[in-house]
Each structure stands twice: as structure tokens, then as C-alpha cells.
Image (tube, rainbow, N blue to C red):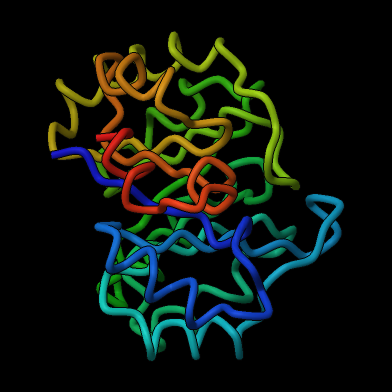
Length: 213
């Protein structure tokens, strides 16, 4: 089943609760939160107090994508907040298995995120321990960027390896997702589509989510 995950990075922060309610009512499967620290990427977004409040009002699973230099500082707290999905960047961590184990101990779905230029082969040794992989299809940091087509090949390569080593692995795509590339992404092997501007810059959230499906 393909899951649609609206990215709150593109929502109206002054009406966040209203925006969450609207996308949930429109048929969203997951709420995607991009957490940025101003170091790993040149932007700042949600902090832990806001994540806590979002989780308290969310009626669907919450997916936290850590675009931060020191993700290990967040993992245990996010687990205690009962966040459903958490991913952190392979490019920021020396000991992937150790940090994945922290999430697993908290019954959180554990994922690794990869920048567009990072080969998927770098996480093959740990793939059997993951619940999902987040492939960035733009360079992280800002919403509304143009989709980078090279990710199709990465998705196909990852799906082939996962079919042999972790068939239940979910593949999430974030960046420039719209109704023109959604079917190609799913055909390549993705099953979670993150969409920010495509949904939140429209007046019809339900129509945009339906068009992605």
C-alpha cells in the first residue's frame, strides 16, 4: 500500500493544529516532520516541545526526519514521546547500528536517510535491521525544490537488495514529489511519498492527496 505523508515544513506554522486536522481529514496516512538544526542544513524548524505537541494532537502516525548533526541527542527522547517513525542521516553518524538499536529499544520504526549523492550501498550492511529508508530526492534544507531524477536508479537498486535481505523494508521518498512523478517512484519500489509544497500550496488538500494515490 502506498502511504502519503504530507510534510509540515510547507504548512502554515501560524495555524499548525488546523493544518494537521485538514490533512488528516483529507486522507493523509502519515505526518512528516523535518527537524533541522541550522548546522547539517542551513535552516531551523521544529524543536522537541513542538514535536511533543504535534504528537499529542495527531490521529495518524508521526514521522520525524532528523536533519541534524547530532541525531543521537534526540533519539531516546523521541522514543519516549512515542514517535512512530524516526530517520537520521547516514552522513552524520559513525555508529549506525548503535543508534538504530536505541530506536528499536523504544519500539520506534527505525530508518536511515540518504542525501541524493550518497550511494545506497553504504547502508546495505545494516539494511536487515531497518524498518525503512528515506531517500532524499532534493538536497535537504528547504521545501519547494526541484526533483532530482537520479533517485529512480537508487530506489530500484535498494528495492532489489531489500527484496533479498529485508522484504518488508519501506522506502520513503522526500523532495519534489508530485502527481507527475509519483507513479514512477512507486514503480521503482517506493511506498511512502512525502509531499510538502504539492499539498500545502494547494487549496484542495484532499484532491492533491488523491492525485498522488
